[in-house]
Length: 61
Image (cartoon, rainbow, N blue to C red; front, side, top):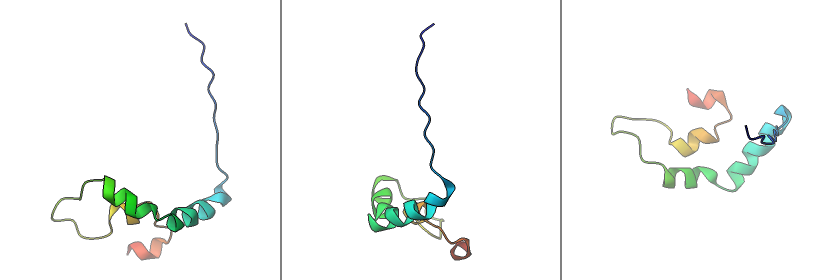
């Protein structure tokens, strides 16, 4: 059996707001929307890109 080295990295939970803000600054939502297919015609709401950087649960309502 081959032995492979597994490297595990993690982000601290307090880094998440910083990461989300960085994603907003680089406009990642725009690129996600360009690459993913549009949802079916009956879908109403935020795009996949908007959902990817959504950080305020109140905005989902």
